[in-house]
Image 1 (cartoon, one colour):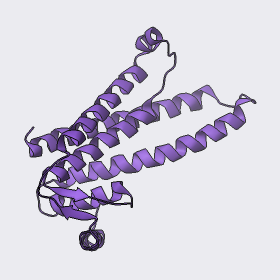
Image 2 (cartoon, rainbow, N blue to C red):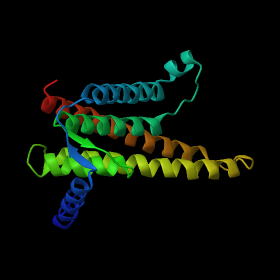
Image 3 (cartoon, rainbow, N blue to C red):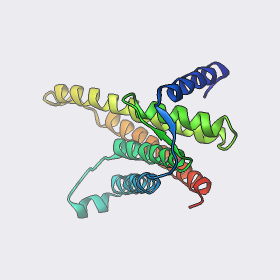
Image 4 (spheres, rainbow, N blue to C red):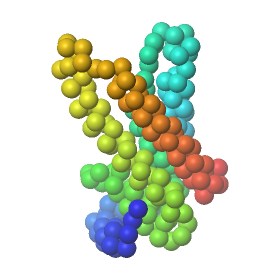
Length: 194
């Protein structure tokens, strides 16, 4: 995951963020409930969409035959982790104020304040990175896939085997993301003593 060189670069970025006021220490943790609620809602969304995506009878009863929400399971799972990371930082009175990528700054601050200090295990940081990368990669692939699918739709070139193989692979990634998010959320709640 993060080697020594990457950790050194991360430390420099966080030091710079602190000097620039991107990362600040606050006197009160105002937004912990907000982030925890968003994490909970995101995780519940991931679970619900995964369940609907894997249960044909439920899809039929809801009027969504052949529903496939695995991409959104991955995204919602990542966001549940992101919001729990924000809750942990906020609970420690660490505020993030940025026009930059809040996701990158959140990750850097999480590693700096909790991983490097030994408060978080490496596996949780690895899961966070994997979830973010999969969500971003799949969003890009999904957009590209939609363009390609639209082009080839008229010709009917999509083979059932290829579609099914893609479906199974995406389902597996979604399930992995959901399990990572559940574990991450459970561990963050322990640290937050919820």
